[in-house]
Image (cartoon, rainbow, N blue to C red; front, side):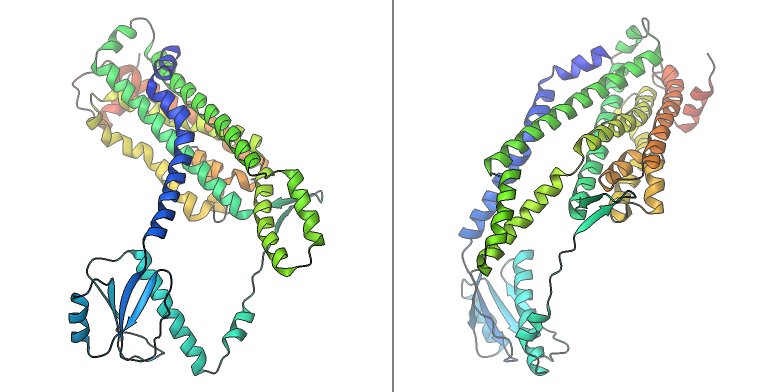
Amino acid sequence: MQREFLNRVQKKSFLIATILVPLIFPAVIGVMGFILAKQEKSAGTSVVEVLDESGKIKLENTQKFEFISLTGNLDQAKTAFSQSSHFALLYIPSFELAQPEGMILYTRENPGVRKMGDLESMIERRIHDLKLEQFNIDKETIKSLKTSVDLKSINLSEGGVEKDSNTGMLYILGFALGVLIYMFVLIYGMQIMLGVIEEKTSKIVEVIVSSVKPFQLMMGKILGIASVGLLQFTIWVLLISVLSTAALSLFGLNNPQQQAMEQVMQQVDDPEVAEAMQSNQKVLNIIKSVNEIPFAYIIFNFAFYFLGGYLLYGALFAAVGSAVDSQQEAQQFTFPITLPLIIAYFGLFMFILNDPHSTASFWFSIIPFTSPVAMVGRLGYDPPLWQLILSQVLLIGGFIFTTWIAGRIYRVGILMHGTKVNYKVLAKWFMMKG
C-alpha cells in the first residue's frame, strides 16, 4: 500500500492533476467566455437579402442582421446574391398564416445553428404578430397575460422546523457529485487494472509474491491507489473552498451586505431601482441557498461512496488485470464490469435527479453496484436516514463480496502467462482449491 501510494504521489502528473486542475478549469472557462464575448463584438452585422413574395414578413434590422428587400423573381435574386458578398438570401413564398411553408435560406457555406435559430425566431415572431392582427387581438393585452411566478420551496419537518430548499441548486449538486463519482471510480479502477497488467508482463510480480501473498499484493495495490484518490479529493475540496471564499469576498457577497441589501429594499420607492435591486436579491438568494447546503454531511458521504464504490469495482479490475497479459485482452472483461456504472450514470439523468424519492431511485441507491452514483446524486435531496444507512451497509457487503471473488481469481491469474482466458477459465480459477 505504501509503495503504491508513494509511487503515484511523487509523480509530476499527480501534482499537475491535483493542484492545477482546480485552477485550470475556471481559467479555461473564463478564457472561453472572454473569447466568446470578443467574437460576438467582432462578428459584425450579417447582411441578409430578402425576397418576400408574400408581402407579409417585414424584418427589422438588429445588431446581428441587416435585411435588404429585393424585387423580381427567385432566379434574379439568386443571380444577384451570387455576385454579392452578403451572408444569405432569404426566400419567402406566398403562404397561409395557418401553415407557413416553403421558406428557404440560401448561403454560400453552412450557417451556424445560432444564426439559423435567430432567423427562425424572428420569422416566427412576425407570423405570431400577424395571427394576432388577424384575430383582432391586441399585443399589449397578450403581454399583460404573461405572469412570472417564483415558487419558493421550503422543507417542513415533522417537528415543524422550516428549511429553505432550492431545487435547481440541488439538481446541479446531484449532477456534479454523480458524475464525479462515475469518473473517479472508472479512472482509478482502470489504474489498478493497468498497474497489475504492467507488473505481470514485466515479471516483477513473481519476485513480489515470494515475499507476500497474492491477496495481500492485490489489497495493497487497491488501498494504495484509494489513498491517492482520497488525498487528491481532499486537496481539491480545500482548494475549491479557499478559492470560492476568496471570490465571494472579492465581490462582496457576504451576510452583512445581504442584510444591508434587504434593509435598503424596504426603503426604496422607485420601481426601476427596486426592480434592479430585486434582480440582485435573486443572486443573493442563490448564494444563501448554497450556504445552507450541508457541505460537511455531503462531503463525508461523498468520500464514503467514492471509497466504497472504488473498492468494490477496484477489486474486479484487479482480478481482470491479473487474468490477462495485455490491455487489449482486458477489453472483453471491462465492459461487463463497467456496465452497472454506465446504467447508474444514465439513470442519474433519466429519473434519479428528476424524482429522487421514486421507487426506481430507491432501488438504484440501494444496489451496491449502482449506489455510489445514485445515492450521491440523491444526497442534496436529503434521503431518509434508514435508506442511507442500508445503502452504506450493503455497499460494504458488496465490497467484501467482490474482494472475495477477485482474490480467488487473482491468486491464480497473477502467475499465469500465455493462457487464453475466457469466462470458463475464470470460473475454473475461482473454484480451484489451495
